[in-house]
Length: 230
Image (cartoon, rainbow, N blue to C red; front, side):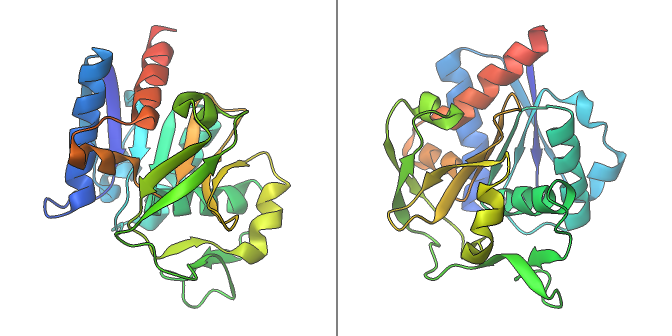
């Protein structure tokens, strides 16, 4: 059995939250894997032993306790626990990384840290909320091997992303940019030294809304099952 934790404050009216549950079910059925998932409210994270679960989805949405999410992401990264962070989760994955690995603690999130002098996450030139977009994948990467293709079309729910002015700092770090749009804007990252530590600005779970599984969700489950057997 795979134990999958979903970090986020569940909202039954949220399309992406409902899609997350559906996508896990579809991926589990396709893989014939026994997956037990549980939503973890962000205020519960300080009292949660993150080793209880085999893998995590850091879900999209507004977090009641952002600091707890950032601390959890650090543990998941440092302890090599399989993690997929989507949309807002991806944004916070980047923030945690630049703070604790690159030492750029002064960089914040333009939406949630308005008093911060500089931001690593800023409004996109054009909002992608509710839109689909084509993404080019780096072939020699974990995501490239999972998709088994060079291009994918995915659905977005966000208006914020990586500040282009700080892309170079990320490019020079171990955290690889493995997916970008037609204008070169960052849409996916992964940490090659980690078994599975992937971030997407889009929401892969949204494929469940049309009854489809997703290779990233399946890859997370497979990796978690492998970890579970070790």
